[in-house]
Image 1 (cartoon, rainbow, N blue to C red):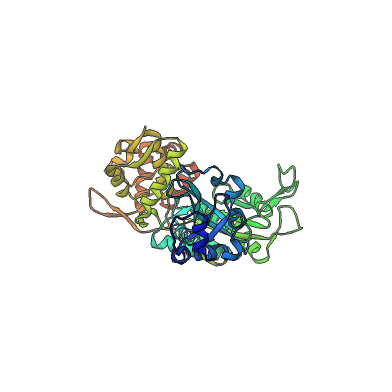
Image 2 (image 1 turned 90 degrees about the vertical axis):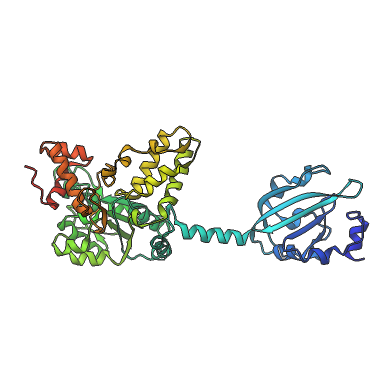
Length: 473
């Protein structure tokens, strides 16, 4: 008895039909079941997905062949009757080789000409090709929590997974706010050290005496106030990654000690002659031009070569083209969900204001702008009125936000915008000097007050004044 005769006898179809040869031409997996949910027929596409032949599957209950989470949880067929609508569910199945396959299953009842239930039809779509496309798309548009589709960012996303699998020193460069910290942590998470610690220290945040103790640790009694032993960050990062941000601010004396560690991988705490062999990968970052600092003898050339085994550069947001819109939508979704606001999009006028802005604070500044706008906007579309006021002032479109105490970048010497009054092109360095001068004038020459106006720490302002040769007296 052939398959078409069996189907006719079972009453599934009221007319003779060569069903197997018809269904074998369909690219979706098809499974025909009787009312007891036993397999009557499968087509060639389902044989390819499951690994079972028609001879293997015939007469078996569906879950013996499909072996899906759907079967374990609650099979929709158990409650399906002649009047039930078709059900579509994304789930998975286990094939004959014990591989888990993502699938899309459609379940529907089969009725005869009298409207009586005679069985069920399942279609099974293999989702692996779609998942692979999604994975490639996601990889092209981001890495971990960093997103972008510009040419430079796409090239970076392809490079980082390869770099992460080595223990080579990595130097990350880029302006403040471009995402150097996120990239450093992404390298750690994608590496074989991901189960180890990720330890971060800002080389410009502490004075030299404290920084040495923080990095290398100290023994009890090594100096006044050292009342107990303290492990340094190198020891805490054992079997993991040590991330030194703003390494350009590292004092010369500690540059020598860091160079020694990179050569022999041994940490000597202050006050101790006994070293500790630290298995640590060093990742560093800076917004400074280390080559220029080497020429000025403020950074050791040999240390730069040791840190600069692999250099990864994060471009400023103003040079990333369509990434601005991509990142804007990303932050909008995040904050709208976090604040439970019914905000779907940004208006055309507000969007144009943001697209015309140069973002001296880069991605961090854009994130703060979106967070502010979502806070202010009650619902609907974000309008220009919901954006920070300084964006509306054409003469202050390049003024920096006081995002934190990190200095704006002097790494890039690219042109920002023309001076509106004179038409003169200005670099970020010249603009920053003008901003500092204006703050000092407004503060009557008082540097503490000027630092408050700028939103910087006092040490940051003093360092910048020295850099630009500004006399604050």
